Length: 56
Image 1 (tube, rainbow, N blue to C red):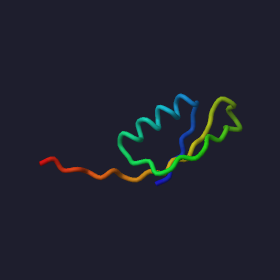
Image 2 (image 1 turned 45 degrees about the horizontal axis):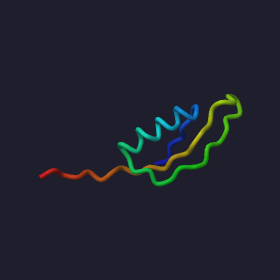
Image 3 (image 1 turned 135 degrees about the horizontal axis):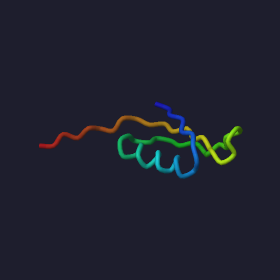
C-alpha cells in the first residue's frame, strides 16, 4: 500500500515512527516541498502488513 504523508518535518517524522510500529515500511520517497505551504513537505511511503506472531 502506498501512503502519502503531508506536513511539517516534525509531523512526518512522528508519523513515520508510528507507522513503523504497526507496519513494515518497504520504501520511503524523498521529501518533496509543498507548493502551497512553504514549510510543509510530502513523502510517499510503501508499507506492507507485519507478520502476526502467535504466542504459545
